[in-house]
Length: 82
Image (cartoon, rainbow, N blue to C red; front, side):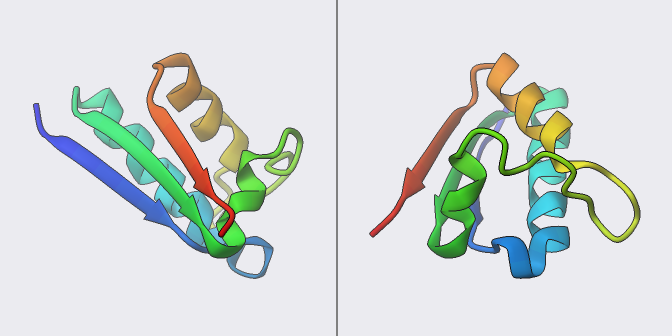
C-alpha cells in the first residue's frame, strides 16, 4: 500500500478537472492506498456542504459520490484557505 496525496486547486471554473482529481483519489483508495486530499486556492469551496452537488466532469461523472466515498473511508481531507 502506498501513501498518496492529491492536491486539488481547481474550483468552479474548472470543476471537471477537480471532479477527475476526486475520482482518481477514490480509485486509489479502492486499490487499498492510504489517500489524503489537500484543497487549496479555489478548491477550498469543495469542503463546504452542498457545493459539490450536481457538479460533473465533461464525461458525466459526479463529484459528490467521490467525496462521499472518501469521507466514508475516513480519508483525510484538508482545506487551506490562506
